[in-house]
Length: 334
Image (cartoon, rainbow, N blue to C red; front, side):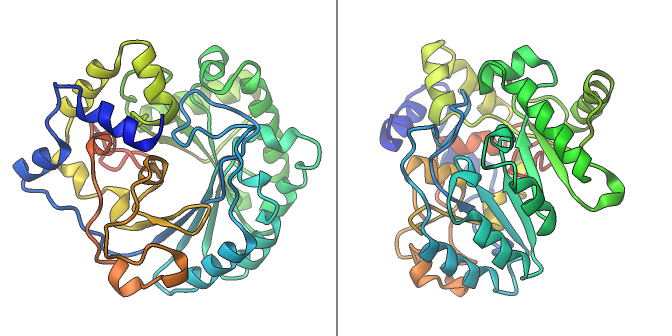
């Protein structure tokens, strides 16, 4: 489904008021950006996996890749004093041929660097070297591990993926990742393996930490708990399993006004593979660029205007403000 079809489904569930009306009723709208603290780059749609919850619907057939020219422009933007984090996602970022070069350049900027890796790629021939590249450039590695139980994780990421992720974590641990004294950060992400909201982040982290250490002898630094937004392949699953109406009702019913104050779009700017600008990676997946009249591409980046922009919203945004809130950095409300 393209973005328009997805938005049509989300607007037609019948048991959810439009997100804009809910915001207005809580005296929380419109949402405006406050600064550009995190520059998030989506390097493309190619991936070695085809996960069931992937909101960008990446996979082995993905044919979009950020060019070196766009990446070079992003380096210029990252030099802006306000940007403190460069957050790299995909697809599998490692499959972009310019990633190694970019990390070398970005590593010299002294910013916090994050790569969202599926980890399985680090076991494939030709990509093992990224473990050393990440360590050399002090890159923080973040990976989705939907559950500490193999069967549930494999349900989302594909048969056998859990065992391969554990093998990759073991290699990262041997290099120092996940060990507090090394300064090399390995964080994991929990996504619910079905049509329900995640549990409390701290409790999940304790459970993951114990089970992964006891059962597999591996360690990590922190765990992010993220709500599955009803877009991409997860939306297809909701439709196929006849869960869309109930899931949207759950998100609406759990609307938390306090979470609106901490949504990630207030401090994040998302860059698409072709340099187009979005308020978040989810809007990018739906084809919703920054509001009309704003600079729409890295080529005409204007931080003064973008840092005060009004955020583009729709009903998928319920996913970021339900319960404890959800962002690429995990829960937003304690």
